[in-house]
Image 1 (cartoon, rainbow, N blue to C red):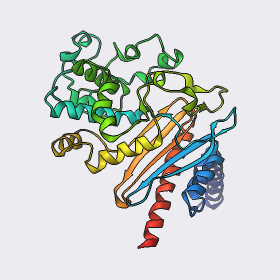
Image 2 (tube, rainbow, N blue to C red):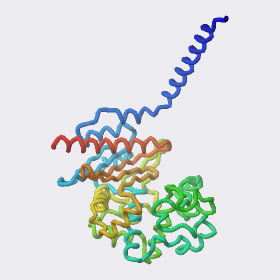
Image 3 (cartoon, rainbow, N blue to C red):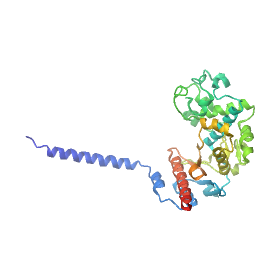
Image 4 (spheres, rainbow, N blue to C red):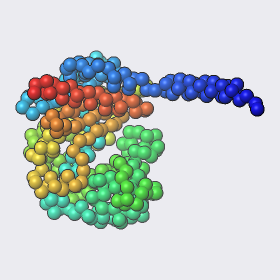
Length: 353
């Protein structure tokens, strides 16, 4: 009988070498900056956390905190404008990107409640010309658009959208036309900016005015929000926080894509009103709850933000960060640092109990 021990030993050695090599290679690709942001000891104060955030490559940070029973608190670090070395401002205007979807969802809710539109109306009832341009357009309802269940492609996923920046002379809806559906209507979920582009146009068609005019009437004026705007055309550009993309020497704040702009405080006041029921009446709240979410993030070239209400500590936290990147690390860092701010608030409240 042959002795197989030497061969078995050799196989084990080869396996260990392969295991060690693969482990080493995998560690090489670990995003250590994210690990560091996650495992560092939690600071005692929000300001310390905001200061710490600058070490991850951000130019400027603004954090707004609204804890019930306390006056709002503002925290900043870094620069409002890095080139001119202007410190970050708590009242800076910021491109809030997809956080605006919350405002659109509220507007659709109010129009539905007042019977100015039906959530079951088909897309082609508003835009018959899209029947041959968007697959299943005659089956997609407004409700599906709000809930991201339409299957319509996301126009920002089209490479041409990025090649043609800033798309000032192009209807960006074209980037979602004549493409196959992602899925059959209401059969799946697929986040798509195209849904909310179309909903914004529905609002304007129904009301006969601009989307921002309706926001002012139904949201901004009732809440006393004077620092929320529809686009750069309405503001002093110096008040807008500069926006930077990692590896690109450019300030993105002057690019006007019709994106909503607001201060962190205005976003925070809106978010609390949305969550505590003071913005919507009982019937409207029932509609909204069946449609959309109550917290949101936003991402655009040079701008990323997160607006969340945390029921367990009855606190609103809005965070603006004016640096983004192609790999998504900056977004992950926003999520991590935002969660750490919430942990600090939670820990502080627990200590007082």
